[in-house]
Image 1: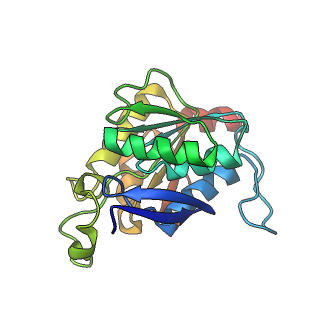
Image 2 (image 1 turned 180 degrees about the vertical axis):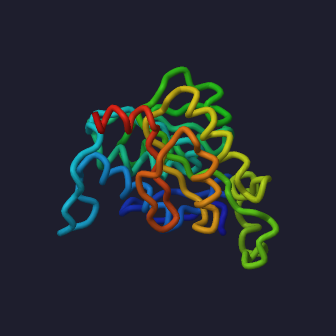
Image 3 (image 1 turned 135 degrees about the vertical axis):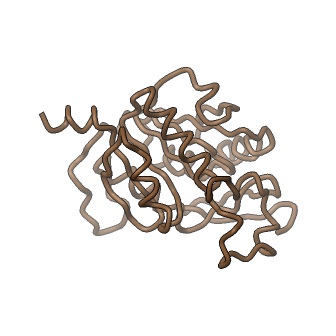
Length: 218
């Protein structure tokens, strides 16, 4: 990858540097899942589901990197309050530049997971590092062009995802939209004891807190 490259994500051109993960098509499914939750069509001709949450929700994109998810959501859900966090200052600078170029204004926070987040969002979306370095099907030479901190995680790739689920459960965050390899989904669902599976589609898991689910069903 060049020092600066342009990548299209969800129809928007983003500036990508060596400090951030290259946005991939599977991550666009996270945006689809959220639009579906609020009852907004994410594809022409596709009828959205019955809204589960309001359009003016508060969304936190954890591990925002280039800002791709937060920016796409800001464009598609102008009524929502969008926050985006990352542990990397350099990544946040890239995300802020992309947001300014595309005319949206998410609030950016430097934070390790929820450490510096002083509010409870209605929904957390996260494309955290989930690659297990022991997977024999990954092309490590190709991935070497991207920051390892944005790719790899301990505990078979699940360390940060588990930490986020635990932190979100303590705050009773109603919805979690998580990206992970499909081979990891069963383990994530089993770990997320405070959450019910709402939907799994491709690389994306949507979990709903059991308290929220109970209220919705009452």
